[in-house]
Image (cartoon, rainbow, N blue to C red; front, side, top):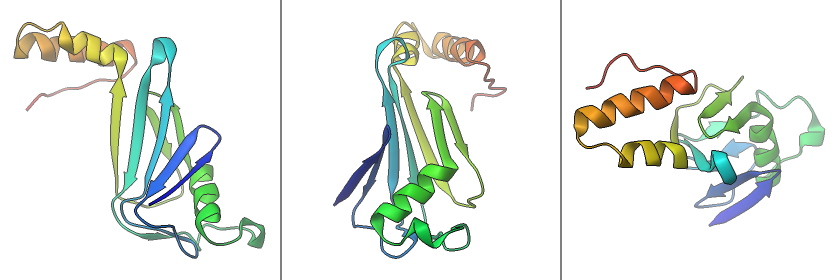
Length: 132
């Protein structure tokens, strides 16, 4: 397995990236402590060649270069805030928040849990129009 850290971002993959390619299944994680305690994980579902977005030979090649380029385009700014720019990629985003866990654990039934979840989303400026 491969792992590296850039700033507060942890990059993980089953194998070390080669050239300028994100391997399928590579995960980028960022976590917080304190009042905003939580973790966000972004997993790239498919391999992705980054050569079209690399603007300088100074970016290099190999695992560290892949991590630096992804770090440039992937911003995880809060436990519920993810932005991926310039890269067309299929990703799976998983978010866990201590505050959300608390809201959900206080639910007495499914309807109450849905209402609590909706309220927690709205407090952070998110919305959910429909629960399946």
